[in-house]
Image (cartoon, rainbow, N blue to C red; front, top):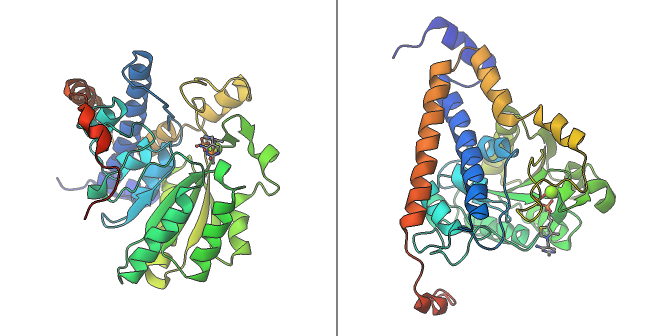
Length: 336
Ligand SMILES: Cc1ncc(C[n+]2csc(CCOP(=O)(O)OP(=O)(O)O)c2C)c(N)n1
Ligand SMILES: [Mg+2]
């Protein structure tokens, strides 16, 4: 369909065309609804083990992934459903993994914290805080060694910053000029510990300066700002093999995990309510509507599609059988 003048003008104001605006909104909403359903499934006893929700932080994964190519990689910690879905994983297989079923991304043997999908170059899902930062450096080394111009985005929380792995990884990435973008999701808390109780330097992006790599802070609730800043880093990394450190200022609306559903002990209700005023999905939807790039009908269609896909994901996960007992002994060692 030919673009109307107002839509074109709106795209210029917003900086993205209607198709991309719809995709950004769709992908953020898909993550939000996925997480809400996952929480519901957990309370029904369908999900065992840990469950850490990404609600509130959707703009980071979606904004960053929107500037990646399919051959670029992403790697994350344990709050990773959003990163994995944004990278293109099938929500049905992600849900089945949470349910511990055989059609899950990790055959139902990993659960919420161990999603992995090579088909979309999502390299996990890692439960040990900070441990995947050196893995990202290793994957970036492999990319460089093979002479490819792909990049890897490594998402991690503020809780990883005081750890040795953070500094070791930044040092090596800078020294060896590795194509890795370290993207810190600073949601102000590591479990119940606020950053000012854990970090001597709370401006996390500044650590990049120590290692002489480009570093920036971005509003992680603004999907377009994330897109711009990560886009700049990706272009630089692809061309010059220069790593970057980006700090995204974000917020989780739920507690640390389902065992801390509201996160009410270490933060005030007022703080959470204040942060909800900058809900990344609401803000982007309103902005795109105001610019005339998406219409109310587009929003309704996106909501319907997302709800259908999440319902399908739950039905698929429910129908998938449990892994057989023999699988306890497979996938332990890599066989050539
Ligand atoms: C090495 C290590 N120490 C402690 C833990 C327990 N632990 C699990 S999550 C977490 C907090 C991490 O917070 P952050 O990195 O900010 O991520 P967020 O949960 O905020 O996304 C801790 C300490 C762990 N998983 N690994
Ligand atoms: Mg945190």
